[in-house]
Image (tube, rainbow, N blue to C red; front, side):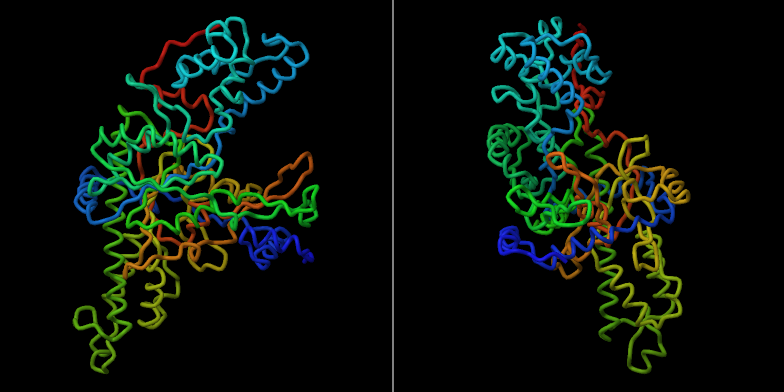
Length: 552
């Protein structure tokens, strides 16, 4: 291992990273991480619950009846900048910038062909919710209108006003939360506002909506300013009070960058280069929240009012499943405690031979009931040798298996969106497979059988989670204890033209929740409306009142 300098040690101290943690990262770079071992895709009846209308209504009713007894939190990862939304626009913008610097012309050159998605962007500019703001800013900066700029192919002026110009919209610098997503008769809304509306409709208790946004330090002030501007409107409209909290990704979750030879990569000043650990680092932020029920949803997965009912319905449904499952798990754990402590007072489920000997232990009927509960209600796989163990050993296995955080995850039909899905996975050192959300990057696509399993998945992960973070004694779980560190990921990056290796921590809903109790529930495609590229805002799920596109 590399010898650290006094400056290195000071840098680690400032970040809150121990020497051992750094050395472990360096070892991980050398050894790499194993691929996930897929056993089978999670399917209906085999890992994915598909509910009848009667069951759906039961769970929704249960949530509505029990919501007031729980503190509810909506946890929204919102720290990333929107730069990747505009990737292709940026590529075209940079080429126009070079041309303009050389020729001092605003008109785009004929020899730079527009890609289809860039052409669609310009053709349908009036359909975007930020069109009016763009029009005003373009007039202020360049004295032009959008319509005339499109006719004259002055695309640089449009893109500069929208993406980069300090007097413009600065969409290339802002987080997705602060971008205008949807048009309404009384004005456009940011995606942040749509989350406020959602929270009021399914995540409020006692007239209070608790929301937590993870943000970047550079966006904190603007976040606060924009929230303070819109909160009174929604508090008045929905008769609620918003309790908003923020957190930032901890510097202690950053990971060191290394050279292609696995040595610490340093900048021109000799300082170690660290990179954010990815959204998996947010398990630390989630760990610091205080709530009985936590909804987790990405900042860009929102729709407009007229299409929101399915979102409300299935959020309530997932939360109802969580409440019922949580209470059943807690009851089983209390029973197990009674058996293992010898304090059970009931004769039900007690082996009478054990009772005669003065040591109460469960009979076979009770143990079978536990097994049925775990497999049928919680979709757990059991060890093959469980039956050969003593009753006390079986109870101890169930206590460890059941005393975990719980998550209920909505999954949608796989329609080819990039991302992960639900699978049965055999973790490192595990004897039985468990339900996990797995990304394609975690799978060895060079292995034909693993590739086939991945490609036969019928469902996709839309990041639609409802979580329970407390145990049956109402003590908070320490969530980092349930992370599988071997699900981290190493990738190639570039720093000022130099190739490096970077490490991402286990994803928040992947390896960071590897050892949670996991339930997958089929939900309709209508609850999944992500915005990964700017043109996704042109999909029907985001066009509440489409304008007529202007074609040049």
